[in-house]
Amino acid sequence: MFAFLLKGGPLMWPIVLCSVISFAIIADRSFVFYKARTRASNILSRVKALCKEEKYEEALRLCEGTPGPVAHILAIGIHVRNRKTEDREKLIARAGSRIVRQLGKNLRGLGIIGNITPLLGLTGTVAGMINAFMKIQELGGRVDPSVLAGGIWEALITTVAGLCVAIPTLVAYQYFEGRVDDISSQMKDTAVELLEI
Image (tube, rainbow, N blue to C red):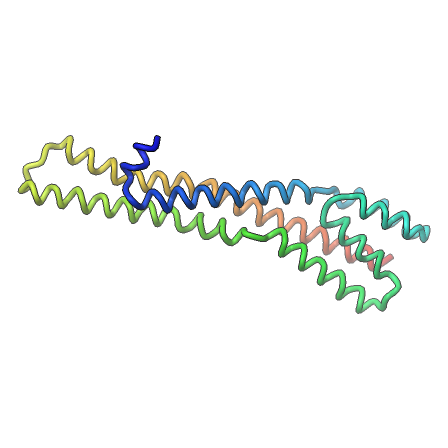
């Protein structure tokens, strides 16, 4: 495998580095989104019932004992229940923005890697093709087809490597962006319902 990578030329190393960074970000975000999972409807209905009965401490304990951003927003809403409506809305919105930023951390890096690795692969391929044609010129046009084919497949390794990194990276990027949007919508809906109580 290492020898195969070496045949791709010097641009294989940035592609390999991109793959390592991409894997690290995907693993990190997968863990974060795994921890962030909660059924918003389940906790919201229980917290609403407790708040209607004015059992705020019990509702707060339930929120603090439940993982996820929706429970966190509910806990903040309960904490600030005695403030003016405008202040409550600002504090909840600020907390929601902070959570969305934390969820989206490093996702831009995935987008960049997903877009740049095919370009790195293409650059490596073009550089390899230039080398192959330089060899043809050196030999005065009398080239054994097997020599030419060897130079071309070596040049194409970087394109394949770039695509192999880019495709799963872009899939993960789109998935995580969707999860951020879903969680953001859940938090907004939850905050609106809580403020109405």
